[in-house]
Every structure is written in structure tokens, then in C-alpha cells.
Length: 115
Image 1: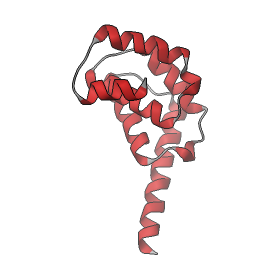
Image 2 (image 1 turned 180 degrees about the vertical axis):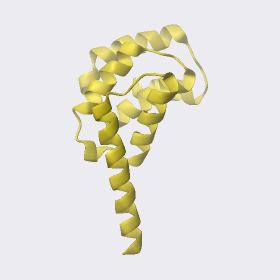
Image 3 (image 1 turned 135 degrees about the horizontal axis):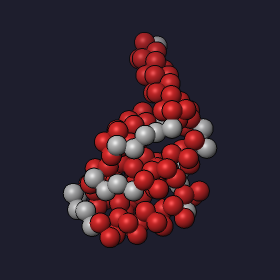
Image 4 (image 1 turned 60 degrees about the horizontal axis):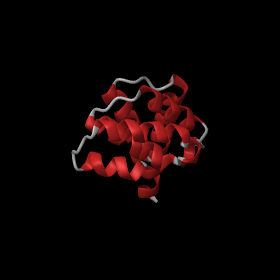
């Protein structure tokens, strides 16, 4: 699902009924989503402007079950951007954790350059 909606969004092709169906199915199988799936899915929905509040809620709950240090900078940026763009609030504890991980990744990247 994540790859399919990402491809539709990348092509700029919004099919509302299809995105609704994918949303319903994604909610059913959200436990199988990994960090990349979460990132790609919310990015795709925000990119085409298709708001699915139940999907965004389910994906943020799933994201909170993942180890925050497994999120890379791109996933963090995609998730924060998508929730902001679509106008759906991230749970404050998830937003804080993502921002802290983004900063930690930036510091680690900077220190590895200096080595």
C-alpha cells in the first residue's frame, strides 16, 4: 500500500476513491507497517492533499510503537512535513521524540564528518 500510494502521489495522480480504499486497508494492517511505510504513506496523502484523519491517527499510533532511534532524517522530515501540510496534529510526545531524534542524527552526522 505504501509504495502504491507513494507512486500515485509522485506522479501527481489523485484518485480519491482509490485513496479512500487504501486508507481503509492500511488501517486494517497498520501493525505490519514499518517506519518507511509510515513515512511514505503520510507523505503521499499529504502530497496529493487527500485527508484521511483515521489513517493519520493510526499511523501516528504505530509510529509511537517504533524505536525512535530507527527513524532516519528523511523519514522524520517526511512525517513532520506531511502532518503539518495536511493539518493533522502529531501527538506531542511523538513530535518531541522525532525532533530530538532529528537533532541527535544531525549532531552524529556532524561529528562523523569531523573524525
